[in-house]
Image (tube, helix red, strand yellow):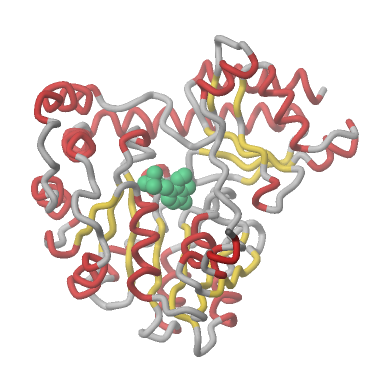
Length: 369
Ligand SMILES: Cc1ncc(COP(=O)(O)O)c(C=O)c1O
């Protein structure tokens, strides 16, 4: 059957998500599980979102509102853009796929940092494009290196800011200087899934940059700080002409009704967002201190996860990063092992609630001391 498939898809390595809690329960017969593998908000969704979901349930026999009218209206008000500047997706992943579907011809090139979000390569290959990964510098997107990688065939550039899996960011000054030098016939996508966790003041205001640059698309999601990962809803912000093109390849009813009402209700709950940011900042300090105590290197983060360098531990204990992650699993702690990213002896952990962070550290200490 392989011969029947389009050649460009054969090189795709299917994305391996963090292990679901149910799977670990089933396979290891464990009951108390802490999942810190997929950068979800472990405080859960806003109570307002839960109420909106309950209220909406009797109406799910109807198709969703295809235009996402009310959600777009509210997002537009907050972002100070027009509804016409927005497109909603079944997760921001879906919009990530719509972009090459809209703009990429077979053989054209897509530049992104490496290691970064694995979906950029997958959506490039789906459309028969050529992935051009540019190595990070000091765990951070190397914008200068990306400029050098531009050729006449470059069509799209993805910038993950803050970057998953390193948690580092590129700043306002760097982004503005970069955009000045990128030809305007290349689409620059800013994937800002973790923007709401950023503590630094020099994070770029990419929405403002839309006035000057017609070639940028900004992606955001309700899966992270809003705690709605299971409902699948994210959005893109761009010039109206770009949104109109993306809308041509969007299938009808791509965003379900429950996701729409929950997202709208979540936006109104500013207290919950504040609570999550505070928990994340506190959890980050706790984990940094614990890593220092354990003699572990880590990459300082602007997101809700931390990349831990286990290389010295692996040398000392003669075990791979993968093995250490498997041992943690047996303790009921799910974290992400990083070999799919080419980071063999690293681990990525989501910053969770205080008790979850403590459980993770206890299990880790047992494995590596
Ligand atoms: C950098 C980045 N972008 C996008 C997403 C996906 O977001 P969504 O759930 O909205 O598809 C993730 C999810 O882990 C991510 O890490």
